[in-house]
Every structure is written in C-alpha cells, then in structure tokens.
Image 1 (tube, protein in one colour):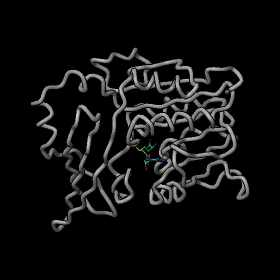
Image 2 (tube, protein in one colour):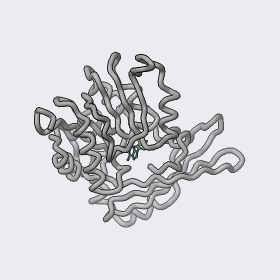
Image 3 (cartoon, helix red, strand yellow):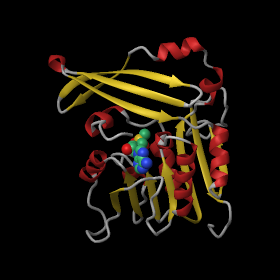
Image 4 (cartoon, helix red, strand yellow):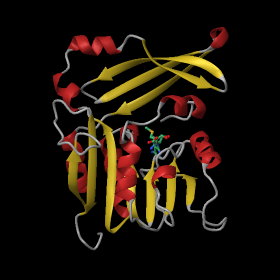
Length: 259
Ligand SMILES: C[S@@+](CC[C@H](N)C(=O)[O-])C[C@H]1O[C@@H](n2cnc3c(N)ncnc32)[C@H](O)[C@@H]1O
C-alpha cells in the first residue's frame, strides 16, 4: 500500500474478514513466537499472540505502525516487549531470528507488484519460519472472477458504489469505492472516496495484484515451503476455484530441518 492512504481512514475501513482473528488465534495457540508481515495497525497480531509468547509486526506504513503501537498495552518488559512493531519490507526483511508462526493476513500478499515480489515475500516468510513452524495467510479468492467474469462485470466495477459508513475523529463519513480491473495483469486499482460533514472529501488509492490459487501453491513450493492446506474460508471448507470468496493457506517448511 502506498503511504499516502492516511492511516486513520485506512484503518476505519479495512477491518478484516469475519472469523479471521479467531482462525489465526487458534493457529497460534501454543506458539512461543509469532511474526506478522504487513501487520497494519496490529488488528490481528495484538489479538492472536498467546500469553507468554512474543509477537513482532512488520509493515512499511509508519502511520499504521504508530496506530499499532498506540493501541498496544505494555506487556512483557520495556527491554523485551511481548508485542513490538517495526518498519520493514516483507520482500527483504532479515530479522536474523525464526518464529513458530508467520502470518500474512487479509490479502497482504496482494500488495506485492508482481510474481518476483511474491516469491521474494514467500522466501522471507520461509527464512523466518522455525523448523516445524507454520506459515498462514489469507486473501480474497480471485480465481472465480479472474476466469469467469465478463467484460460487463468489469465495467460495473468502474462506477462509484457506496461501501460503508465510518466515524473518523467524531465525524461521520460515507465511503465510496471504485475499481479498475486488469485481468491480464491480475491487478485491481481500488479507489476510495470519503465524504464527510461540510462537503469534506478524502480520496485514496489501493493498488493490488491478486494471486491465483495455483500460483500461490507453486510460488510457495519454489520458496521451499510445503503447502499443507488450502481452504475456501476460515471455517476450513474446501477451496472451490469457481465459488470461494476466500483463500486460506497454510504451509510448513518442505524440509523438516527448516531449510
Ligand atoms: C491489507 S493490509 C493488512 C493489514 C493487517 N494484516 C490486517 O489484517 O488488518 C496489508 C498491509 O501490508 C502493508 N504492506 C504493503 N506492502 C508491504 C511490504 N512490502 N512490506 C511490509 N508491509 C507491506 C500495508 O502497509 C498494509 O498495512
């Protein structure tokens, strides 16, 4: 996500998917250490790190990191906080330590510009995953519309549609969304317009490159990971390329030593 999307506006609108926090919390049960790549305002990490474990959240967006820090209760000690947030790039991060769980929730992978960046991110995830650890991520499922949607559907996305109503700093805003879809490039350029009191308007763009299920499987294997689950939702229903709205993916290291 490019920095200009104001953290308060972003955070008010992008609130996660039903069941995601519960899913990641169950997955992190028993873990001693959790790394979240693209942690945003800490929505997931702050809720899923088990008591007594440590969590590190990494993001490029200083404003979202500031929100995460402001919302984090002081756990652990000042010298060794249980939860910490730091600026870093999921394509190049090298923390020099490994984690029992590496999470990339809520379509974080779709912030990456191309297949090379996707692979770099999965390499990063593998390099930070402890032997026996789990990588887990979720994203909206794109296979269905990528293969099946018509030109007419593509056109409809281009029109402003009211998406949400949010309160920001005590003021009520309606949120409108319009997207430009490029099937060949696998990109969706989403635009958001917030209309508030007195005609106040705030606009932001959110470019995404979506990843198809097979591409995710192949890229994760190239990164030395072994896919262990691909579900179509947080309730662990099977992934259906034509009908699933979500893609929930779990992987381990391909070699038991954590290669
Ligand atoms: C869709 S949001 C998900 C936020 C959070 N994981 C959640 O579930 O609410 C994706 C996040 O990834 C961050 N991001 C995008 N590209 C990144 C990169 N190359 N390295 C680290 N973070 C990145 C964005 O700033 C944004 O906070």
